[in-house]
Image (cartoon, rainbow over all chains, first blue to last red; front, side, top):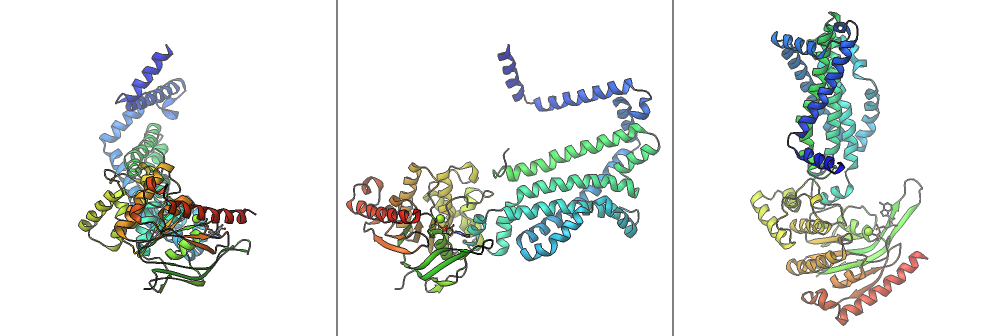
Length: 268
Length: 262
Ligand SMILES: Nc1ncnc2c1ncn2[C@@H]1O[C@H](COP(=O)(O)OP(=O)(O)O)[C@@H](O)[C@H]1O
Ligand SMILES: [Mg+2]
């Protein structure tokens, strides 16, 4: 009996679609519980509309073209803001990781700003740029800059001295040491830092849209609440969570698998 | 002709920023390594062998005494002096072939030429079939072969080796020692080889420098007059010249270890 169970488990693990089916089962369970709660409370359409209602509202919003447009706006802001944040944060972290003097100057400054969250700088950014797209972008950029800069900084310092020595005794210049040793050697940290940065940026874009009133997913759930459209609020939340998982799975994970896992720098 | 590497009155102290005391690592070292010679360095652990190697590599700045190559003071690393470290020095993010070709890449040698030279050295160290593997997929012995090939491929005039075979198993070590001997015959490189194994020092060295306990001084130079072609473990173990040299080195090292433990 036990034996058969184990055999079934082994078979199941190697079944090609096992992962997808497992995930589908988990989602189905969550939907069932959700449906169950929704059907037992009073006034579900205000407090917790059933999954079917949420799905219907999504059909409605897709039909009107609103959902794709909001989703696109949010995604473009996220991608623009966090790419600029990463493009600035990675070299910045590298430089202060390598150079003591610049670390002495910039580290306290970075520490100061890191404690002032993206939401806390929002008011001043609104004063400067008004309720504009620029405002939202600046907040995303600001939010994504610090996690990556800090992780790259410590990554650079953790690259074993031996690797640097080896390159230098083969005649590597300063630039070559950075390109061939410090940058790839910090890849595990760059990967972790990027994930943190993009994760924070994803939250910042939602908050930014709500506060600045720019159309997008954040704005959608904010205004839907005003209009008492709970199903749209939930739809927006689901969209936010699902797109993060998709982004993580199809963009960040393959990037890691191709670099740090291939090089044996992390355990699979 | 003056020697390839010349060290005169080299003294080194490591400052300790926390306690203010300093560690006296080397005391008035005088030695010479001739062109095409393979010298081994032995001495109790902590006697300053790696310190000497790092100074010769140009990785450690020094103030007292002098170290020079071809009559020029050593003041920084150079691709003329290649180093093979004990472990953890081939880059995990480069394949075997890319690690071996790294030195040529840094010098700007064009790709075609580079690949030709790399494949020669891959053959020389017996890593054929592993070109595209990454270091974490190799055994300890293969990693060290890769490290040796990387240094050789950059074609330095002098090779500095810091206990390169210490971390591999005994069987592999014997093979690696015989391979290095073949390489020394084939390339006629000037090699300074640090080891803590007396057998290894006597097997590989034309001469063996025995260091005293810390602060390291040159205690004695033991000559090992055996032609390179005769250096095969199966024969060496019965060669009276090898046995004599090994026993002499062993006796000297023992005395120094006793001093350093006292
Ligand atoms: N970077 C360093 N800072 C301070 N002391 C050091 C440093 N490197 C080595 N030492 C000390 O110098 C002495 C010689 O070290 P080392 O040259 O590594 O010895 P060996 O290679 O012969 O074992 C040791 O006592 C060691 O603790
Ligand atoms: Mg040492």
